[in-house]
Image (cartoon, rainbow, N blue to C red; front, side, top):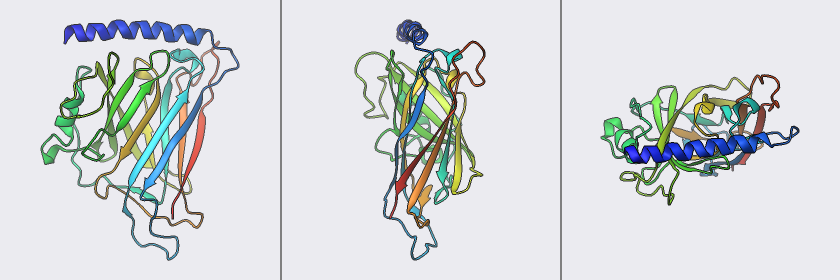
Length: 276
């Protein structure tokens, strides 16, 4: 384990220096670009809008965030995402009641199998806080160039109002998220917390805020997850325009930017999914 971590430390140091070098040569007029490449609700055929539905049905949500950085890895120039906030349409409901909470604190040495067996389908039912289908990982993530490391993602309920996002990062060799109950192919793990609240914006219901993303050693440029568990996620198609909305707000690591940095403005991105 010690040699494994030492190898990762060397790779991480090299990648960080490379990221700083690349960032230093980016032109001043460049800017970050964030997007929501994936936003789907399955099934898309939902109750409503006519006749007006009286109850939602269980659904699967597929959400992906992505960022192209102008100065990847340079925090003073917005080279990390600092906070991601997602507003989810009020036709979609998130109800974590009845799902166990994952109270485990995972060290950087934790493997994918450790999280799966502590808080996922590999754990006793009373400890299974997993919020994705029990047949596979929740999704994948990656770090920005030049490192381009890949990660396997698990999404758990952390508390009544928060999620735990566990990622096992692969830095060497073949990337695989298969067989998460026995998977030890990653080099290090990271965790993020996602806080749930009320959107407070017309036509949106749930707000998910993921802070401190810039505390990670390398900038994330892609995060994709599928969530589905019984009726935890449910939806109807109540609006007459038959659109389910997703809004992402991306705040970068130099907000507010200290001079003389190149300010990266907060990005607000809207995505719609057509239901029926």
